[in-house]
Length: 248
Image 1: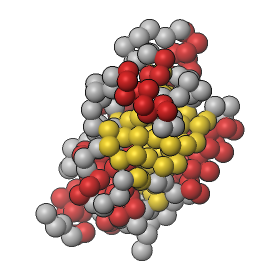
Image 2: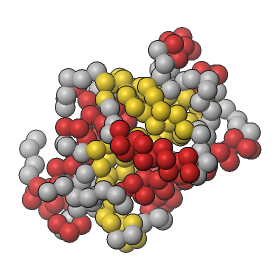
Image 3: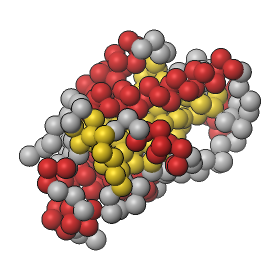
């Protein structure tokens, strides 16, 4: 399928002046809840003609938010809006912590991501995907200023949430992965192909190396950390979007 810019904008119901400077992706089951929370931070938010692609304004900057679960869905807004001139792709949401030093409510900033999902192979032949170092540094600085524990390092993306048996988690821990999700490597891969910068800002929910999953009960103080981190990843993403510009 080959769609030119005019065709995409017509299909989206998007004016040239509305092309977003940044695309913020979030992988979550709880789409309705996330939409309500995230879109409350944007002015004049509306869903475009393509489902679950929401355009809004943050301090007069057009920003695209999409709650896109899994790599195949996450790459679509990146490719579409990257082709229209968006310059920055930001993956937010939660991840499973793989190292014992990463606690629930901490924030992980992937610096290299093992490609274990199936979408990236159709865009590039890489086995690793990487973000833009400058934007990782900016995100880290903003998060530390808010008092969050942050972790930069190796990460992995797969396409099978429940295919994470203990022996596999142990192997990933030995290989040095900080965490795991289902979108980040694909977002980085497609952003690179589209000429966009990219950064991932994900908070740890599960503590997989300790056998704790999102189905377990967390202590009140841990839940508070999770909630604060969940808010912060989007707030920081919006602040980064203010520094992005449309590519010519």
